[in-house]
Image (cartoon, rainbow, N blue to C red):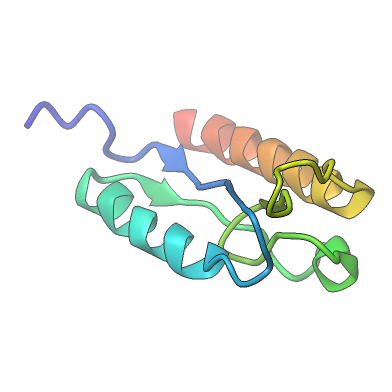
Length: 99
C-alpha cells in the first residue's frame, strides 16, 4: 500500500537439482508477485552468448544453476557469466531509473 517497490528493477535467480526442475516456470511464477508489487522486471537477453553455451541453467527469464540431485555440482563458467551479466544489467537499469 505504500508503493515501496513500484518502479524498482527486480529479477529472479533459481537453482534446481536437474535440468527438468522447472526453472522457467519457477521464475515466471515469482515474476507474477513482483509485478503485483510494481517492480520492473529485468531478465537476460539472448544477446548474451552464454545462454546458448550453458549446459547448466539460465534463460531469458533469469539466471539459473543446475546443482545436481545431490547438490554437488559447482556453478560452471557459463552460469557464472550469466549471473554476472544479470547483476550488472540490474544495477545499470537501477541507475537509469534513479535519474
